[in-house]
Amino acid sequence: MSPTTTIPFDEKTIRQGTGSLTVQQIDRYDSDGYIVLPGLLDDADIAPARQAMSEKVDEIAADLLASGLITDKLEGAPFETRLARIFAGLSDMDFLKYGRGWRDRRAGYYELMANSKILDAVESLIGPEIFSNPVYNVRPKVPGVAAGAVPWHQDKSYWPGSNSNPVITVWIPLVESNEANGCLHIWPGTLKTDVLSYHAETYSSTGYTEIDFEHTADAQAVPLPISAGTAILFNDRCIHMSTPNKADSVRWSVDLRYQPTDQDPMIEHGIGFLARSSNYPDRIATIDDWLAYRPEHSE
Image 1 (cartoon, rainbow, N blue to C red):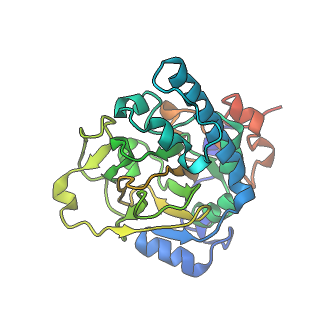
Image 2 (cartoon, helix red, strand yellow):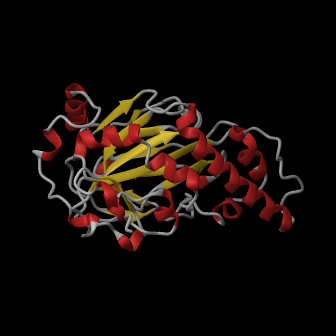
């Protein structure tokens, strides 16, 4: 049986007291559309993902050196500043050659997506049958690169025809995220908003979806500066954005997504995986399954 047919989603499933969130936190999510979980992850939890990001930076630096665009890979530079220094003086298109967000299959990303602290929090919102959505992103917001600023949008605008609802985004910075380096901004109370009309923006060379101005003229932007390892959970209809990076270091973050297992796995966007199941624990995808693009484990 596919993980997309394990258990029907209903309100009773998410109100059985499972997971790690308190009643007050769930109520806050239900009213505002998001919750902030300070210090959800510690340094050990985020270390594998940071290592995966560092490996990617090594590859980018080697490619830029081979192309003659840089003369030094800056291998001894700190994680927080190395990529910013590498791209200093290069163009937006030089950066976008490697994508506005990364979705590599690296072991460190699986370890983060399968982290029990994250899954415990998500379980409180959607129940114990959890599918890790294929649309996860590693976000290196580099100073001076237009692609770093993300306009007002709803995540669901990227999959408007899918029946996956709710999809919970878990947004986690790997370094301090603040107003200088472009922290996340959320519009409270918009989690039950329909998918609003939108267009592909043209100023960043990325084609991000952007909600039409008529809907955002009175937007209520709440900046959410947070420390590394703190998590922001929000629904895919919740309206949000982030500002440009005006600091001198990279704002590293990830946005991970989870949904009930009975809903559309969105294979047109990639291959997700069965992250948690009380009904079919033997089918939870291992790291080897994920690296091999298998959505669940099978003998």
